[in-house]
Image 1: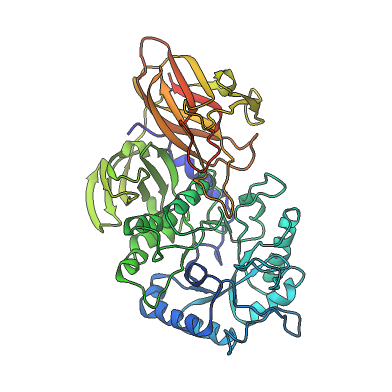
Image 2: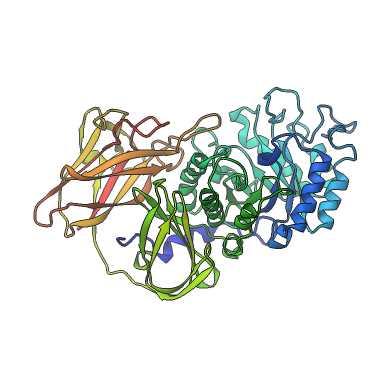
Length: 545
């Protein structure tokens, strides 16, 4: 693997996040009912699940939040104006359950909406939520010993998004409830204001993507929207990006896929909320959720998520710092075929390290590289310790603006306020059999036949609820008309003119070291399924001199 841009300094923006010694200092761990039973909780099932969480050892592992999701409420408000419980499904009320959870070593969490009506499967305006009743509902939650509220967003106009959530946050904090997760499906405010920005003053976490669903495609979709959040240092102590509830234990994924799903969530520092049948949980599911090595990384005191180091055609490499000078590393097969993958630690600015394989639970000493034999969509999750640093040699890159490339077959310049020329190469690709629009950079000179180029790009093609797709745009990149590679570029942000993700590494081969070269970027022929078929807008590329 060629050397990456990664350096220790790349992680420093995380330190700018507000420090928190209270709620939100670490990602939430626990149980939420939604992926398990959707909006149909009841008193008996919740009581039995609390018991099972304790008896199966999950509480002792750190899964200490118990949260009832949608469906607990009545269609009528209480006499004091607050929401109240459905007396048919919770005949003894919420208070005895919360007290029982607390007696078992857990904390209590509730669900509502920062809107007039709740999200329910039939999606009708029947169930009252908390907008206009924030103070009364907050007082009721506090009376049930609530410390954490998941606040949803159905039936709320976008132009009131920030104010609605601010009102609910203020009411909760006024009664001592400091934990709130903004469940707004990563919606930007006012068109393009990043949710990582607008939620930071009012919430301890926010959802980085639309709802998770069963199956690997949903895991990949959410990962591709979370990548830019982590690269930009927008998730950390006091304000973690939440990738949604776990689907581990539910139908739709192989055991290997479920293990990778858990590893990604753990290393991205997402909340780890079990959301499956705990009472009848099979041992294989319990084993994945009980991985103490991954839990330790998720709950690490530094609170720094891993970041994408490099995406290859078949696999991803992520890494991030841990307290005490350790490093978390994750290799994920994205080909669906599995394979043998090699990681040179120099690419992480590591010369040698001891390696703890967190899935096999084995240790190796004084390694300078790692071979991972992965199952389809499998992963290798590592903790590097006793690290000896590697200082890469100084190199020089030449930057070429995307607007200076030769555009063909429908590609054209588009506005780019974050580009020095004010323009980027857009409409590259387009679901055509020949790849569609293209941009070609000519006269490229380099000293290496195989190297990583750095691509600055924009991709704001984001999938929201009730749609399917990868949250990534595909591009085919070739050198001198040959040696092409297909790469999926994850979401870069929310503004098509400003959200440039810089220095995305793509390994290419076939360069002449004695003659000028051409690099062509076009779409993947016929397009990536469930996308527009376009490649990302190209702001510029950097090539090793």
